[in-house]
Amino acid sequence: MRVAPVSAEQQATFGGQIRHQRQQAGLTYQQLAQAASISKSLLFEIESNNSAPSVFVAARIARALGTTVDELLSHQPGDQP
Image (cartoon, rainbow, N blue to C red; front, side):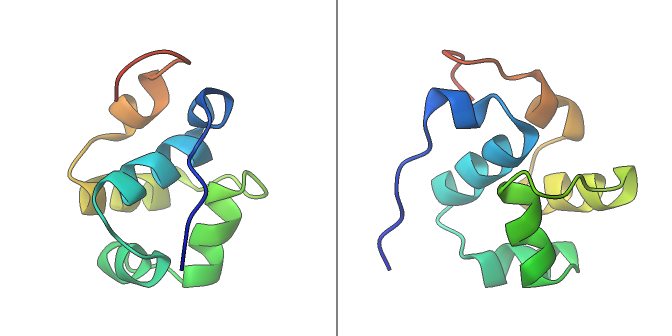
């Protein structure tokens, strides 16, 4: 499956940062969801900015990506993640 690149505007969102980090790590939705112990559908909703994760879920996603929630929240358009 071919995935569209994440734009700078999308990266500025929390969900966009998660998607960017997941793609950079070469992970599928299934792989990241499993590593974070969440459902694939929840991960999709978060990446699509249709749902905001709880702090607990955000921490599990960040940990699965090898980063922190602070790092995921701190990137602005044009920053290098």
